Image 1 (cartoon, rainbow, N blue to C red):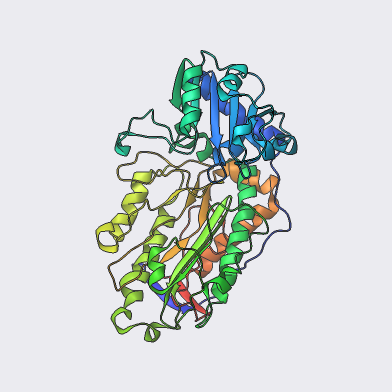
Image 2: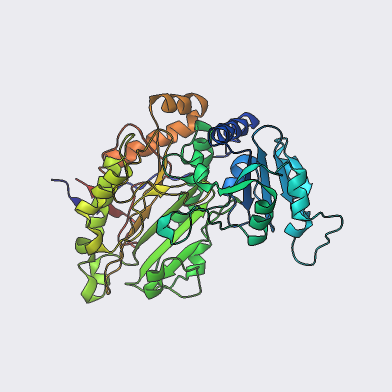
Length: 458
């Protein structure tokens, strides 16, 4: 019978590579061709992708850039050159990406009060792009099912864009599922080059969180700790988080000026495009520093949580279904008892949450190239707090592992080092297909001011 033990352990090796691999033009061409194959299969003549600063992952997947300050609309014909409708400040971005995308000026995407000289109205632009009478799909960042309480043909894209597209085209459907749906979405499976690029992101966020954790002590402020979250200028995939005490129950709060007290609970998370790492634990040296009513927290909450994470990782392999992974968590760490609400695992890519195959009854199998985030977040009743140990893991079959080893040997070497640390030092059991992306994968200190001890499984 496996059990969680709190003991002195070797710390993980944490480093940031000197360079990140760049995706080549051929990589984007393959992405576009995969989409066009789906378009031909589904009888779609044009595929439109809307983006703004918060929701740009679908757009940048094909365009090679995300819009800054303003919105954008990518127009992908079944055959021919891609076009991008852009405002003042993004009009030259396709030249920077250098993927042969034609820039089309649409001044209304620009910020309020900026010049709109020479802009055409959206209806005219869509017609000039060739959409008149064509079967068209429009993607933003969501699609809808009956569970949403609205029709499946609903759109989250701004109303005026939807109306212009409906007026111009023969038919308009929501195409976000083609990109994001569990199992079938084009963005739910990564190639070796994408994995290598996102591994750099994982190193950046793991280093930030590790430095934050090393700086935890009574009297430090949330903003002091957040100063360790250095993105190296990489675009964020979510806002940085760091909270103490009761504020930590809300999880998503931004760092403030509150200071840590001995016995406070702390939560923190940091994500750049391609990776997120999060931790949640007590600012304490041991149970004696906790309030009397929660001194059994490690035995009651934290150890069962760590064991659930161990089982999740042991079950993670090519061919396992999302439903099986869900059941693995719920059987040993019941949702009804520990209060976790969201899916215990999801896809991650440039956006922190693409979608999730992990839900009750899911028959969606995980495949080679799947990039999964361990995301079991307990929320037990007050006065207890939960715990958190979020990092990403890629599944890779023998062929993909060989491609990583040959094309990106440094990336592959770091992944193998993490596997050895997780299995030999921390006691995890991993399929040979599991490639840890984060230097902090599996590393969890329940009492943050004790820098030497952590959880392992024996």
